[in-house]
Length: 385
Image 1 (tube, helix red, strand yellow):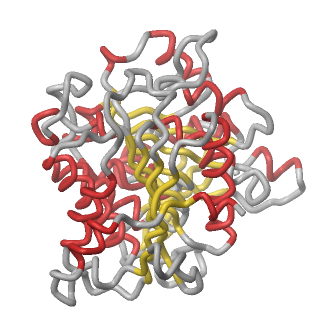
Image 2 (tube, helix red, strand yellow):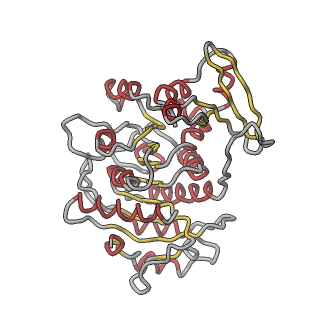
Image 3 (cartoon, one colour):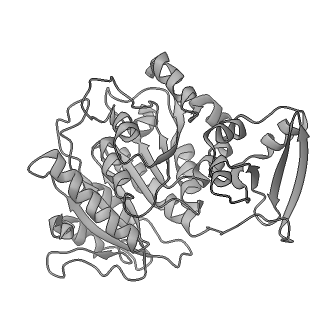
């Protein structure tokens, strides 16, 4: 059983919990300990898990990720007005080979998904995104992946999988269950023009750092449609995380990255949340723990909404544009927007109901000005379903 490979939470982290107030996360998380073993997953909403594998790091790691210090900072934080149950499964150590580690990650994540428990993964390197994606193989066919990253991580064609090339393996590996890939926060000077062109050819979505920082709410509809969220800590500016030479002076600040994590938690679809490539510094430990806190906070504000013209909770807008008629919905409860996509895949299956794509109010305003929203166009070309 893959769960047998999990290492219990360290005694140091457990000892710190004894000094914490009853309202703290540390006193309310069910932990994997040497004495009591694994916590029960029944009724759990989240499962925290560290992955110490780093052999496929693009820049070789000189020290192991200190998940104990991240836990100490996380356990200190006080609970919100939450009803969710949180378990800490401990860590997955390096296997005999990297493939062994990937297998264990895949099996554990797949079982958590079957139990409707959201894995929150603290990984040493971002290539761990690959086995989390493969965990859906027997669960769901079409997966939407959102990477919060300054790079697209396609890598060179001949390059083996690494933290800078795992996306190439996801795109090419069989079975190919990836339907859409979106990037939030890329910086052009870190990405070859060929990679940017590839994003366009595959009708994937990419949002530059400056575009998101000018209006952080642009990240919300992207995350609303995600099943996996993979956050590379190097998307955060070096000064915010006391980062090494692998970090950049440009990037998201602490407030922005926590807001994005909250949007991820609010998404009805997000089933896996991973944070990778963090540094062993006090600032990093604190910020990573706060990102996790905001993800949980967002989860506790989830509202399941299915737009419908028959529902009094939604306004429907018909916008004639060129040869199309775009149909938008606005929720009167959350003020979120959706647009209908005539689904090519649905029409082939003789299903007449169109798909609904999360969008922004600006997309609606653009359509009113006879400009087809880019996200609608890309989804339509893919046969969004």
